[in-house]
Length: 207
Image (cartoon, rainbow, N blue to C red; front, side, top):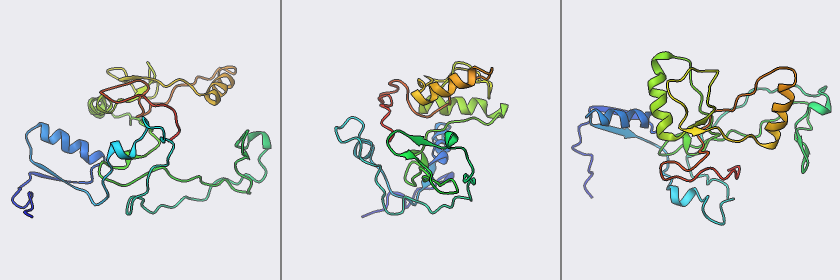
């Protein structure tokens, strides 16, 4: 079989299809010939993102080569922590019974499309004025949800998605924070809070 890229002479070679994929998209818009080199497996959205299926609660698949090794530094000593401040829930009780806080794992995956294939959804800006227009483009494409007024980073336009409604736990934290005069701001997330660009809104499955 003939390699279709054998005689392709790109202007730019992009390593990795995560944030680099966005750079490639932008360069192509300006007429450059671009090739992306990606070493990791490919994920088919209709096959692996099953939120519209009855078996949507299946965990995200771990393909060979998709999980990179990582280390977690020593976490806080909680041996003397008051039980009222320990993490717990009604079903499992205290989440950490040891003398040190324990890592519950790092949500990530390596694959064609970058680590955003499976991640926590945090979508924060660095406060660089020069980057603001480019953040705006990326957020509009992805569909980032956030507050009407972002007190951390000034914006030229509002988020493309309204902020997610606080969970019950977040509502309790907000109530506790507001009483002494603190302010709680909704987090900015690359998770749809309403249908957008042909994609369904998050169904809060925790996946």
